[in-house]
Figure 1 (cartoon, rainbow, N blue to C red):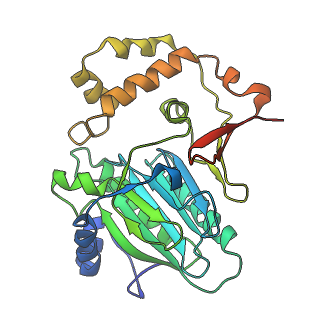
Figure 2 (figure 1 turned 135 degrees about the horizontal axis):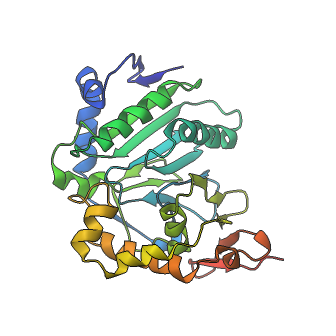
Figure 3 (figure 1 turned 90 degrees about the horizontal axis):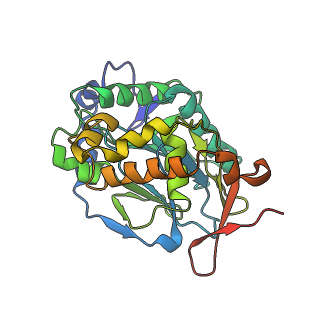
Length: 303
């Protein structure tokens, strides 16, 4: 079944701007979202999702109270939640394989839901009116992909391309958290982006596909095993000026956060230091992390 807005079938749209023309409610709701104050999330209850990652869980989770992500300039953050069970998923999509990814996200929530009554609610945040129209294409593809799912899905928040024209709005637009217990979606600040932040960034940098990083049944973050080929040529970027890195390694140079260049440098450095990625995953096993008594994510030794 197609997407619904205020219990009305979405119908055919040609762009995200067309969507807002047909449903002004979504534009008003988007303005309300970006006008809210940023909430700093306690790392002790956070599961942070990086680009090309998603995580799903339920309110019964004892290790995670908030799933969040940020730095979505041309990327989009997707939250899908079932109102009956509270099963919820957050993904950071960059357009690498949108149609397949959307189906996976729907399955992740419906699998956790069981057979409880309720409806699927969708919240979209991210993208802006960039010159290359990258955001426009991703916005449309995400909407179209959800529109083609067999489940009824109700679009509640749509703070995406076509709704926001002011670059400053990206400060709020590109960051999002969802409270696992209540389902509240809110603009967020994250002081910690672990575990294994550089490893996960390198996986994406080297072309990794969208992955599920969380086993909610065991409260474990699962990273890898990852595969990448050694390429010493990328060391070239470490000697370049910040403006050059920003220009060529970003899809949105004018909209990146201040830490973008340093993040790229640290990712490239990690890649160069771990050209033999197999050594990061002894026995071909993933890296596993659980919530320690201190509240931080702690590596679990494989048996």
